[in-house]
Length: 166
Image (cartoon, rainbow, N blue to C red; front, top):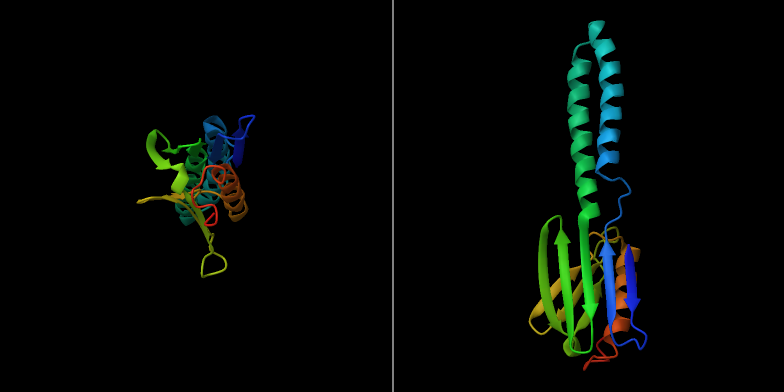
């Protein structure tokens, strides 16, 4: 999800990109408990009748499903906040409690959206300024990356010394 705010004269912009996952921690725990209860009840009934390998397979399956859902839930806590004004671009990349901050020069900033050589791969979005090159939106869909690239270009073009490169 990409959300943009601009001030009234359009000289500054605030862009937020966040992962999409609708469950909160409580919902995820409830989902895993529900799946576990149903799967283990059915597998337990089959194990009671002598088909004990089903119980082992059910436990392995639940562990795998829990691992996948927790990894997907972690993506909900991934965020990038980009503040653009006339002389600098501040980028904050957050994954859980770890935050990284970058500062780039707006006048020399270039937004690059590179299409992959293999069609089913997602494009790569990079923001370059001087010697700094950042990949943005690695957690976004292709359409959201395109939207983020357009919003970055429209916010930077007013302040860029390289208007033709954008």
